[in-house]
Figure 1 (spheres, one colour):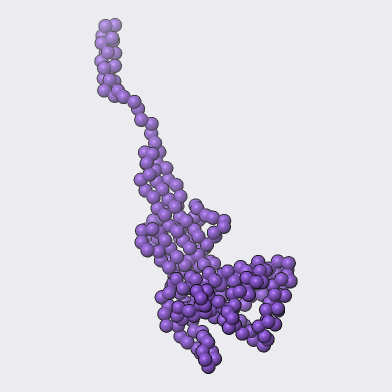
Figure 2 (cartoon, rainbow, N blue to C red):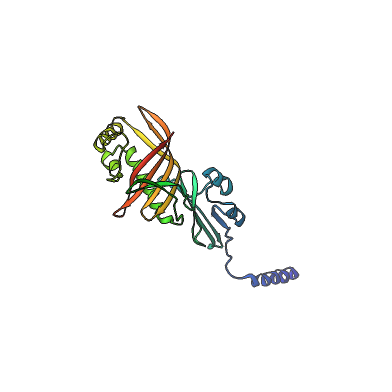
Length: 249
């Protein structure tokens, strides 16, 4: 019995070396989309949304009101502390990837696509080759104007729609007043209408002239069609306006 008591005392003494509170085990917590360097290298401007999903997966962060922006966010917590974070933001124009921003380097922006188009001159319309394609800020402003033009049409806002046309705009085969009345009738008669633009390409000639080509899809309760259209734009008093339009059949 005495030997047992001595042995028990020795065991209790040996346990004294582990005195102190025990820390609970904390699991690593991973949240979001982890993008490897290999996946990032496969990402290219011009990809469709389906191709981006194939490379990166579906983004964990999405905004129903801003479908043209996708955010891939990732964070790793170890022992209760954030030890790694990633952020990758993608911007789309329609179905095509046009800008990549990962915060680690300057954002990649798709270069504007140049076109041949006409600008007004004293002798009429003169075909000119764009001399500078490196104007992404101008291309973005032109693109925004064209998208607002389509939105005003979809909203059946005749006054706002007509305001996108330059004072120098000359409709073919009719006066400006006749054309405006015709456009007002066609815009307001449908109960509902939707104008969608796709495959948009912007060509910048100089600081005040540009051209935009796109596929225009129009749907209403009365009529629907799909057209390839070109809008020739000019900047007047800081505002981009339409001075000519052409439908390619």
